[in-house]
Length: 371
Picture: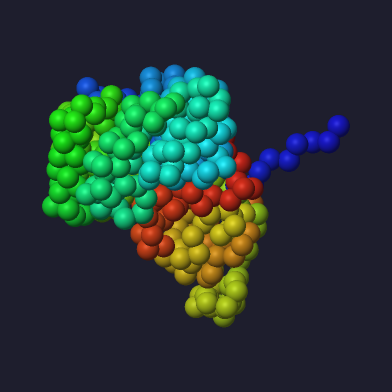
């Protein structure tokens, strides 16, 4: 029988920490509920085990970006809502599977209604209002008439209305203006006898920075990145959340190299003294940011911080072992965790934590624990 070869790079995902982060968020926003946003395969971390653990923790609602993501978790028996746009050809299957659909314009509402009528079903929908994101949805100044014209279409159950912040982490005044515009719309609709069971606007940044969006009359907040203990690089961080990820690799070589040797593509590092150099089995194909080359990043080996030398390549990264001369081939290398945060990677790359989490390659083995 062929032996199973272990992956060189593993991503440990602590489901117990994710559950605890969810509970911290849920307690902070109560009595509002929490929608767990699990788009892009739960940000690349694996939607099935994460959705199951969140259901166990008590989450009552899932949010995704598109139909295929919804179908992956609809069998768990909780409401699954598509938060972005929906294509015409996706609507019939979404209706038949009970996925909650977004209404972003009159045409979409009519197509959902027609599909529901053909199937003899009722389709649950939420109206997406563009209060300032500028990406999708019904412009807030047009929304009252659009909703009034479509809410009574056959086969539709309009149970919710929602919007989205583009800059909750930085532009407080603009975000508050969005909230006020949204609630004024809701009030005008109520005067016309149109009400909704669910109102939601706060994303993770909104939870921390825009208090108005986590109070009544809102009924729910949406959170994704915070479930993994990560935050936006800007804005407040008001909740004690813990990172749930550790990325590990192995040393494949340890060599004592003389002065003048160059390391890696481009010869960007030329040793100015004899140096013990380790080669780690991880590269940018696994998600290690190229921007951490040349000493801008580090790894942990035997509890010691070892700076990256030269340019990170697709499969390998060289590091200085000056702080850990006893290191040996086969030693574990911690690339994230043990004091190295997702935010540290994001800062080195000049990006956001979301991109870092979504960037782990497909040869990185995801491992799940209840820790």
